[in-house]
Structures are given as C-alpha cells and as structure tokens.
Image 1 (cartoon, helix red, strand yellow):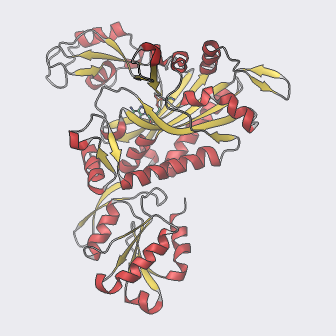
Image 2 (cartoon, helix red, strand yellow; image 1 turned 90 degrees about the horizontal axis):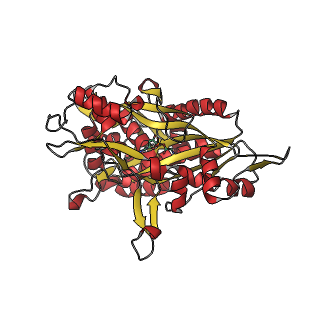
Amino acid sequence: MLTIDKITNLCKQYGFIFQGSEIYGGLANTWDYGPLGSKMKNNIKDFWRKRFIQERANSYEIDSSILMHPKVWEASGHVSNFNDLLVDCKECKSRYRVDNLISEHDSSIKVDLMSNEEMLEYINKNKVECPKCHKSNFTDIRQFNLLFQTYRGVLNDSKNLVYLRPENAQGEYINYLNVQRTMRCKIPFGIGQIGKAFRNEITPGNFIFRTIEFEQMEYQTFCKKGNDEEIYEYFKEYAKDFFVDLGINKEKLRFKNHDKLAFYAKAACDIEYLFPFGWGEINGTHNRTDYDLNQHQKISGQNMEYLDSDNNEKYIPYVVESTIGVDRAFLTLLCDSYEEETLQDGTKREVLKLKPFISPYKVAVFPLVKKEHKDKAYELYELLSKYFSCTYDDTANIGKKYRRQDVIGTPLCITVDENTIKDNTVTIRDRDSMKQEVVNTNDLIQYIENKIKI
Ligand code: GAP
C-alpha cells in the first residue's frame, strides 16, 4: 500500500526532496527540493505558465514582492481575520487545530458551519480525545494568526513591522491598474503569478502537503459584475483539466464546495485529490467579488476603478481567482504516478509513470560496456543535453541502470553499444512498456521530441 512515508523516503533517497535544515535536526514543516525535485517543480510551473498565461489571450504574468506595505494586509483582512482556531491539551501540552480535532473524531461533522462555542461544546460533550495522550482535557479555543511577521530597518518596533505574504493574490490586486494601463487590456483580462507564500502553520504537514513556506500559482480574472458567476464555473473546470492534463487520474479528483466561505469570497470550491492520508485540497476557485479592490481603494485612498473606454463607464471589477499550490501539485503527481510492478522474471520494479514533460530527465544515456563504449556514449549525452534534460550513467549493470531511471520517472533510456560505433544506431528503451527500439542517431532528436511532447 502506498503511504506518505514511502513517498517521503523515495524523495530523500533519489534527490527529489530533503528535510529542511536536516543537519540541525530539521525545522518542522520545511523541506528543501533537491536536483530532481527542482527540475520537476520547474516543469509543473512551466506547464501552468503555458496553460494559464501563454494559451490565454489577455493574460499577463507578474512577479511582485514578497514584502509589501503592511496596509496591504490590513486592507485584505488578513491581519484581523486570517486565523486558525486552536486548543491545547492540558495533559500533554500538544496543540491542535480545532477543526482537525473534530473532523478526525467524526469526519461527517461539518466543522465549517460551527461557531467557536459550538466547537468547544462538541469537544466537551463528546469527550473528544487528544490523539497523543488519549485524554480529553483541553483549554478554551484561542485564535492564532497565521501571518509571519518581520521588521525592516534596525528597530524591531511596530512602526517597522512587515509581513511575509500569505498569498500571492494581493500582488496582482495592487498592481491591476498598472498592468491594465501598460498592457492596454480590456476587461475581462487575467493576471497570474508564481511565487512563495508563508503561513505560520502549527499542525503537522503530511510531508509537503502543509508547510510554512510554499509556492502558489495564482491567476486572477478581472471582470464585470454579472459575468463573474460564469467565469467562476469556467475556472473550476479549467483547473480540473489542468490536473488531468498533468496526468492525474480523474477518478481521484473531486470538487468540494465550501460550506463556510473565507472572509473575502462569495463562492468557493476546492479540487481535492485522494492522497494516501485521505482527500486533500490542491486547488481553489474563489469568487472574490470586488471585496479586495474595494478594500484597497478604501485603505489606500487611491481610485481603483476601471474605465471602460468604449462607453466611459467606470467601475471596480469583480475578481475570480484560480489558485494551485505548486508543492501540492508535486505531491499529487508523485502519489498518482508511483507504481510497484512485478516483472515476468519475478523481480520487482518501482516506477514513476510521470508524463514525460513532467519527468526531471527526459533521457538517460548508458554505455553497454563501460570500457568500450564510454566515450561514444558520453559524446551522445553531451549532444542530447543541448536539446533535452539528460543524465549519463556508466555505473552498475544495465538492469540496475534501468531500475534507477524507472524510479525517478525517466521516460527513455538510450544504450550505446558496438552497433553505434559500426552503423550509428542506438537502442532506446521505453519506461512504461519496457520495449526496445533501434534508432539511427541522425533521427534521435526528432524521435525524442515526438515521445516527450505535451
Ligand atoms: N489566494 C487564495 C489562497 O491563498 P488558499 O486556499 O488559502 O487560497 C491556495 O491557498 C492553495 O495554496 C491551496 O489550494 C493549496 O494548494 C496551497 N496551500 C495553502 N496552504 C498551504 C500550505 N500550508 N502548504 C502548502 N500548500 C498550501
């Protein structure tokens, strides 16, 4: 059975992801992407750029600051509303999010719809136990703000307080008129960005599912009130198609409407994936109305209206947001593509059946016999590296070399042998079918391009 521990170990063993600050015993809920993880993460981000920016007319990518004026977060509501509700176990001092504690006790309870008093009453009445010490003796519920704070300049006082952004979206909102003016765009138009976000999450994370530092790919459509609901429905499906086209099994994806809405939303729907630990959110579509832009107008005193030059109409646009967590998309891909297979000879192989455009390496090049074919193989590796992400391996026997590439998801392995020297042909082995083909090196680049295209 696939477990998150198995995926975590695979990531660590093969260079996808390492524990954050490992040599110091780790920093909880932080992870570092290694050589293969960085490549794969970039492939996910490139695909998002293709789908959300390149293939959409009137779509623009920006790269705004992580540190913004603190008033941005007062206006957005995060300073006063971006809270988790927590309780501490009085016996063993463990700390829990109240919603998680109740859902784990009974997953059919709609925690979203309960007030603080109702949640506390539920915990006491049903003797909900601390998952660690199994006693039921909790403190009152407390609000805990998730914003990370830091200070600019030399004085650590409240005048110098700044926040690390907890979402990318505000960067798009405060720049929307800059983009609109410089790109001369007409509503509806979209602004997206990929970047880090930070949240002071206190609950354990299920590997990279919940971390304190993560990346988001967020896309905001600025539209006229009245068109917002249609655009909202459209982006729910658009995001689902994004995951399916990444290669995720449709059967393991579902929509989940929010019962209780975030402070900024008129409607919100998540896409959830069935992880080994249960269903988890990987995307959100939010109808944020004109809430954020109105707030920025109010707090900054700047006019945030859009001028429709066709009819001289002025209004604050509505915003529909589609947001995807890069790290959660990464974890989804690993869980969904991992397979253990028993081969005809009874041996086992682990394989990541990633779509080739997501795989860290597209091609691995090996010499059949190191002593005899090494130079030719390395020459080919250098040539192919000009076109594709490649790796070269002349250690171990050919079977072991295949196994290593299977488990990191490399779709094609090329073996250089006597025939390469004689008549310029190589043997190409396909990761999924394990079938081999002989191809002339003159046709190799075209052959690989055909195999790995999106
Ligand atoms: N701008 C709206 C927004 O930030 P969200 O649902 O709070 O909405 C969007 O977050 C996405 O960011 C989530 O669907 C998830 O994929 C990802 N995400 C949120 N918190 C995360 C965390 N602590 N660790 C990793 N990814 C997270």
